Amino acid sequence: MAVLSAEGVEFDFEVPVVVVGAGACGLVAALAAHDEGQEVLVLERDENPTGSTSLSAGLIPAPCTRLQKEAGIEDSPELFAQDLVAKTHDHTPYDQALAAARAAGPMIDWLMEKHQVEFELVRGFLYPGHSRLRMHGPKSRTGADLEQNLLSAVSNAGIDLITGASVEDLYVDTAGRVAGVRFRRPNGAQEMLGCKALVLACCGFAGDAEMVRRYIPEIADAECCGHLSNTGDAVKWGEALGAGLADMGAYQGHGSVAHPHGLPLTWAVITKGGILLNLEGRRFSNEMRGYSENAAEVASQPGNVAWDIYGSGGEEAAMGFHDYRELRKLGVVKTANSVEELAAVTGLPLEAVAAELEAVELAAQTGEPDRFGRNFSQEQLLKPPYYAVKVNGALFHTQGGLVIDAEARVLREDGTPLPNLMAGGGAARGVSGHSNYGYLSGNGLLSATAFGRLAGISAAGIVLESQ
Picture (tube, one colour):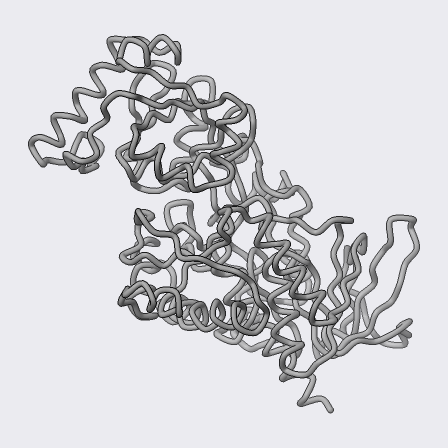
């Protein structure tokens, strides 16, 4: 894994635009460059492309889409950008957030209209931090279906995708221009591929335990439920090229991953009044801060687990998600018709559970925030039947990386762009600030797809300039 001199190097073949990674970022980048008239080749390390995209709920937040307008929802890129920046406590630069927000809506409409990628608008509840209904995803609410839809679009467009192709080295000239890459096949054979522009879409470093402990030690001991091929390759190459890095402490965790099954329990159950109880039957955080910031909270509890407790409203909202229906089939979801039964099915102390439910009821009745600063409405009061799922806190993917501009070009430490290198998704600095609390629901796929499209367009433009 190195950056080597391109002087005297001969490549086996050359393609104008090369994309490393076949998750949502890479596939969207490939479609964008192709639509700009350039030949594209996507290189994917795994035999079957899945990545972080397939492990997600497949939801992309975007304002001013056709689906939003048809639903009568008024939104704007500026409002979305404000939501993004507010979630990071003003750490993410507004112009970075606005670039993503402005690109997201047209990107969704383009995928639907030009490439027949199916989306629907998620309704019925707002994810924490979003001021409008703006989540778009496949009907199943699974990233696996989003990934398959994008793979189909790439195939239908006639874009070449090589799987089992592990990119190991970049070849760069004295000006910092990437001349090509070397990749290895599963049988050990190596191939040299030249390019005019390169897009790094190989996600972050959640699969590299050493990098996780270095940059985000708070989550280093939690389970990694992300894609283990995310080993920080883009960051390592970028550092060797003198690229700037930012927000390396940012990540998407999840405080509600069914244990030990590894499937995420949608945070919709929390938005409908759900709470988290540790093995002592006690709440330990403001759950409405979001699922990412609660990952480390859950991971630090006794036994590194908690119970997600919710009512009929949460059950109804969750049934729209494929993963939840799978959890139901597996018998993971426990039900109870009384507080006593709830304590029995979870093994939690009855007195503690009853006290926590009473505290929630008191907060709802008085209208005052509870001891964690969370507000409850009368509609959110938990009443029988109760539902319970045992969960743990997990790391999904990192959100810090290479610094990019509004065109997804990778920037050196001095702020100047590298000649022909683009990045997006987990490979690049996202819009989630510098810690776990800045992750607004959908930020991972927002950065992947919005900056993925911008990266593809920029790559095509660089090729045109070189001709």
